Length: 362
Figure 1 (spheres, one colour):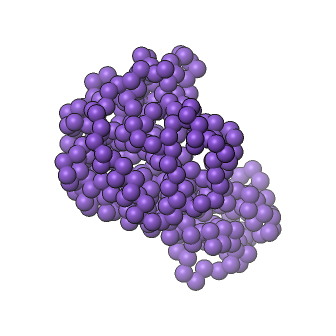
Figure 2 (figure 1 turned 135 degrees about the vertical axis):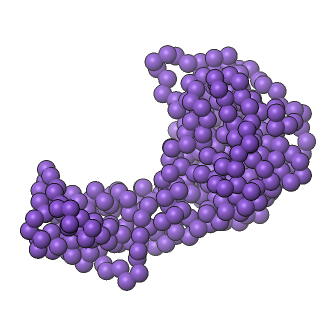
Figure 3 (figure 1 turned 60 degrees about the horizontal axis):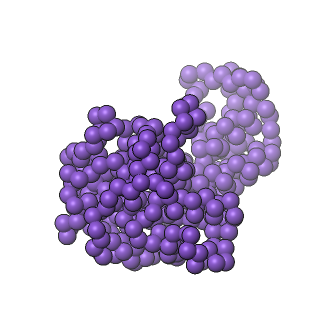
């Protein structure tokens, strides 16, 4: 989305309204919008300009910060792709849009706001007021997902992967690794009962890991038997989902050892070798969020302390939680954009452990 020489929000919105009025053929009413074919290129160019100006006006410096974050995320992804010889390492489509064109991605909700304002004859300040309610939380959601991707795949990159395999299954029971040069984050064959990694990779020192970029809310189902017609899980396939994720890594003896990480029918679960989760300040201090987090990490039973990544030192867990013997061990890492912190998390996997065994859910 072009921003050079961009006019102000009222100017861009005024230009759009003036174009509609001058054309005379465009019908913009509260219930309908009709634009003649020959007028559409200029009409939608003006809508796009108004979108960008509205997002810039409402988000201010936050938009520039998210653009820098998107560049950092894209850089980590680029280095991972190059080191492992991949053609692509695909994130959720909305996050891909952010990396490709940050302002256009941030301004996406403004499209309907601009058209609603045009069709209902709303003044620029009223449209801006609506945008002030809509755009900041959307921006925060995109920023969180981009930061999670920067952290999680920065950890994967720190393990120095040199080769990836796709994880496939013909029937959700048999699982195998297949040659690939493309990774899709969050993907698996959809299965209400079973979960499997999205990829396997081998590191420069010969170690083999399976990875699962799981939607955090999906972990709530790992320890539950399926109740037919009452199951709202995504079936393990969250490739299209924008939302809070965690990173699960599993050490394998060889690529051929890849298998299921969860079987809800039999309440079996493979303990992770590393569990990493990015948390926001409110996640640390809001009782409901803390309770869900504790249930999640206790259910997964990571072989090493859970790695909690926060951008800064704001917020803290409830007093006594980290020392509570009923809570899985947690290490908090304040990372900012320091990639050495991600390197340190990756080094947690340097210590050898016994080969992972499938563990029955308690």
